[in-house]
Length: 422
Image (cartoon, rainbow, N blue to C red; front, top):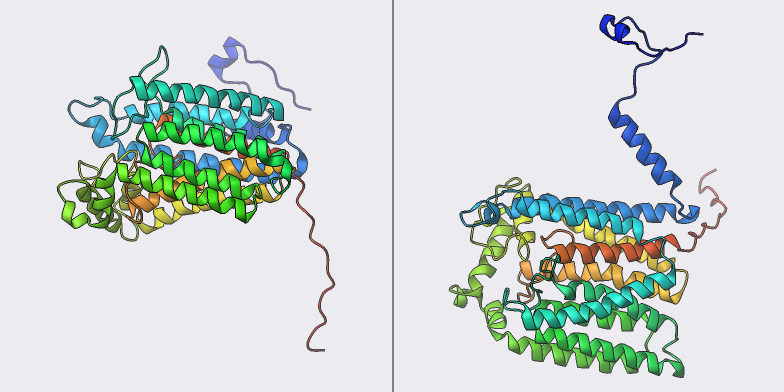
């Protein structure tokens, strides 16, 4: 048997030592280590495929967002008076993306008590920061939802984190009681009280887009909890009335949405440019980084209008891919909901997972002028530290439920039908 021996300094100079086999390339070793880590991770065996699917589609959305942010933010980072660093926004988003990946690893092993306690404390902290943002924060895009720098904390949007924390806390409240019985009244009352407080704070901040998403989340959780129709309809009517009243606060947006050609000197100009940018992409798009509309024509191309930039640069093909990512998030959330182990898990996955799809639908509806402008980000895709963190936290909760999901039922074996022909 041929044996290997260590190289001496003399052997290295002469190059006379022969190895049994060539060294394994570094890339192959990294891939092997990752496969071993994923395979050895303590996940229940029946739920591994579902967890892998949720994880993969979330990582794909984060990667697409990094690409979109670098392309859409270039006019802002490279112009005179900007950051003087073409990769400034990308670096900032990349740092939060690393935290987002860490959330997908850290959150699933939490116990139920730890998950509810941590996010319950997060809800209280978010409410306090929302008050600070309204009192001390500045006016950004017509609202007061951003905090000033507080110590080591950079400015962030606490309402983004509050909506995920509210979804989790509400799932624990609504899931431990059956709303179809008479024992649900205290929990429903507490749920309505907290919802009214958050809605009032969001109205105070004049954040119409966040108010719309929060109202849809409120109704979604009530619907998933099994509330009877006679009780659900008054709540839905109340939300519609409050939404109509809040819309009157931003009447200029409503008028520009209904008649954009008559408001080309204001919001109508941006609406028409959004539609033009989407149409410019055609089938295959102009190419990554080639959209001319992101240069001063689109409002906030790296946040609110990033879908228009993506559509212009990737065309129908890239837009279909983006829609497929959010469709996959919705589908895997639906699979997780169907296999939830309890009512609490059912509401956790439904509230957090469908929240991502609802916000994505609202953002893309604004970009295509189906609803009035709201100023909402596109989850995972738009630039924003708070938005990416909250989106990853929501998917981490879905992953938490998938880790405890019931095994997928085995289909019943049926006899093969008799042949029609002998």
